[in-house]
Length: 498
Image (cartoon, rainbow, N blue to C red):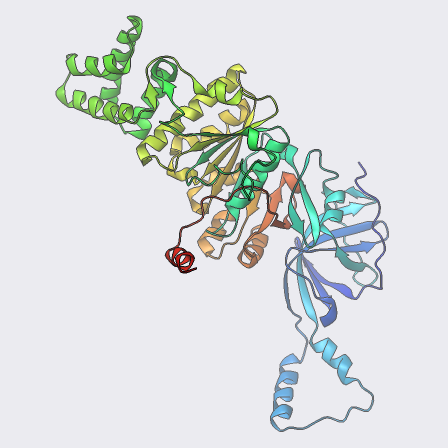
């Protein structure tokens, strides 16, 4: 399939030449004034109707024979304050040669008459090929084509950048970076744009920073105000005991509260007995545990855990199910923010356990539409048993997971290998970079070269949303209230003084 028109000719003769190739790495020779490139920029080497698309990952000094002697001679002459007589002005040419640069780049695509040839071994002539800059959008037009559902996330080297939202659907996406580099803001931009397009989304908000997405920066409403619902567990978000069911309660007791197996068997027996008699309530369940004949250690184990569960106020009597009500309130998309910021760790994990189970059940029977699930710092409340479940079974049911973390080593390696998209922000630590290099859509050298140089708010987008090539982007702003900022003492002191 032809994706774009042929490349336009360069505005002037090429002054960059291919030096060597090693696997997918190309080294390009350039004179000083023509090496004004940045990491993440694209260049194209054109010969006839074929072309190589290369991404710059580094710029180094070219190794010139005799350079060491030239440098020592230069130092000696400068120290002696001696000037050389140069009647033919060849010094400038010599200087340009000595200052030449080597552009290290990675092969991203081979094009032949406008078509991508992924298996082609073609390489252009070192001498007759023309090498020039190429904009990110032009690269994407050739490699990806026009996005099916474009959403603008920011800009790339001065041009507006749109990713394909349809490639987030039914995909596993990871957003990661050091603290303060902009990963949460990137997540908010994605959610804002997805909900505008009519998507359904669920956010586990551990820091209370997504609750303001429905408010404009200066107060008042914004474009998604009517679509944002903040669910606060134990306050306006509760579930009935009959709705939660025995299976989910056993999962909560086992995975969240580490209840022994013999205690779980006794609890299941009591639950089923009350259920048969249609007397299943919080009070009756506690009373039955207290009076039933069982080992005292088992009784204490069950009772102590149930008191913590029920004292939270999240589980109430009856068969009330909040999930269909939340996601069925609108037909043009909705963002449900589950605010976990004020919950104790045990209760937080209990809420997540129920929500994941409930959403999966309703997706399975078709009572709610497919949705995007955003988990910020998921390792704090998602048990190890759920990682694989989220990215396999739940994804087939209609959940498109988006994991957000500043600790890349907290995400299992299998998740990286199955991920479809990665939004990578700045990292400096070698161990973090090693974890990220396991992402299967890009080579490790690109990650380790570009990630440490990323500025705050700048991200390397990799995966299906950008045609499986790495694209550098600066995330744009949105008209939404920013919450979750770290409170600082000296900032409050400055405000008081003013």
